[in-house]
Amino acid sequence: MSSSGGGGGGGQRLNKLLVNVKIERSLGPVQVFMSPESRVKDLIKAAVEIYVREKRRPFLEENDPRRFRLHYSQFTFQSLEEEEKLVNLESRNFFMCSRPSPTTTSSSSAGCSSEDSETTVAFKTPFLSINWIDFLL
Image (cartoon, rainbow, N blue to C red; front, top):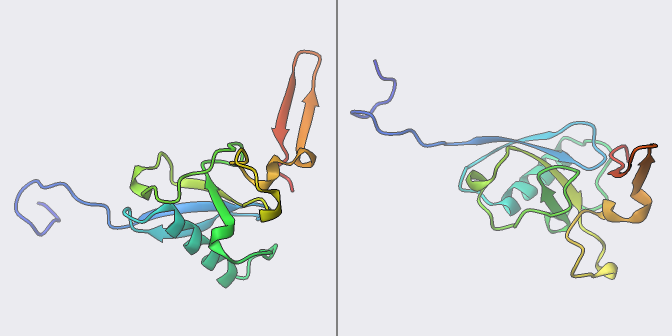
């Protein structure tokens, strides 16, 4: 027996997506239900609203969603396009960080504020030298 109300065999559409957004320096992700047709900028806005409404810590210095960027992970510097639809993205888990301040306008800065040299840590071993982003900020 089919649980769908319609006749035969049509594919079911996604109504909502459960998306996890880890905000920089926070302990756990914010869970957001979004329409698959929503855009990245809508997800950023919803995640900021939920974070503020739940009074999570540390408090955000800025509540304006336009001051944040969304990434696939904290280890990628390239942010997602704000007009991209959620259904087209490769993941349902994201990392959100604040944009660099307007005083440091640089066309090459496409990543989080963690791109600053003070937030990267170099781990040196006898075999190789690797730079990692310090995710314990």
